[in-house]
Amino acid sequence: MREPAFWYRPRSPKSHILRPLGALYGLITARRMARKGFDAGIPVICVGNYHVGGAGKTPTVLALTKLLRELGETPIVLSRGYGGRLKGPVMVDRARHTAADVGDEPLMMVRDVPVAVARDRLEGVALAKSQGATLILMDDGFQNPRIAKDAALIVIDGERGVGNGKVFPAGPLRAPLTMQLARTDALVLIGDGHAADGVAAAIASRGKPVLRARIKPDAASLARLFGKPVLAFAGIGDPERFFRTLRAGNIDVARTRPFADHHMFSQAELAALAADAGREQLTLVTTEKDLARLRGMDGVPETIVPFAVQLEFDDPARLRQLIADHLYKARERRFSRR
Image (cartoon, rainbow, N blue to C red; front, side, top):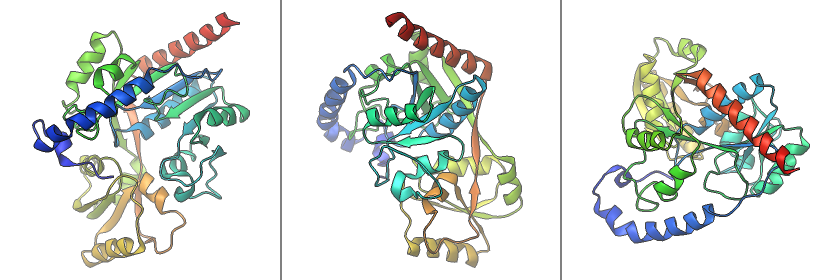
């Protein structure tokens, strides 16, 4: 879906009209979140966000994957497989699956880490453990109580924050903010914007860490686009963030085409993008997640350049200590119950 603009306006009449629906949705979600989850038997780290749409969860998951391996862990990502037709449980395989099968994010992440897709998260846990996981890294699912979390890291974009702070559909929040703050073990604040400063202060006041990080372009991607004017397109939660990242890397962004999150491109749309780029002698560039969604489709222009990024933390040592502490406590709790 494409996020409505009024979610990011503080005094929108539309938001006011929808507040009763938001209150009802928030009440239902809050009751759901209060349920006790199933103990997976191994540590579970959840990477989530407070609101619908994108905030940077996927690069955060990949950054944590690298860290966990350095700590000697064998992580497997557990995903619902949003946008895919397979209910699972199934281990994602790039050789036989497409985004239409398992969703774009799992298909992108599986290049770096094994990914289990399951609508029923308990079945996903069982599959991950059968594949030798020492730890489950949940991609999203913060508001889902099905699996007990040993640590919940919430990702937030410094440029967007939580919008008007109201619950869906009056605003972007998935549940009342106060309840979500209480269940947060650490906040990952991405970028230099100030829209999330209030949330960061609230987390810090609870004695929880606020970790700052930034999206950094891949050097090889920058080199491929150096000196070339581009037509950038993206169907992610926040296409503007992608366009800002390109410009921050001194890429000449001549034109942009935003699409809704998880947008399934038609052949006509791809042909139109290729024609526009050809007419103005522009290079087509998109995100790796969008390109994962295009795999296996007919009519995909071969000239599309994927723009790779990675998340860099300002204080990686602090993140490492945080994760190590949570893993130690998670295993200590389970050992003491025996």
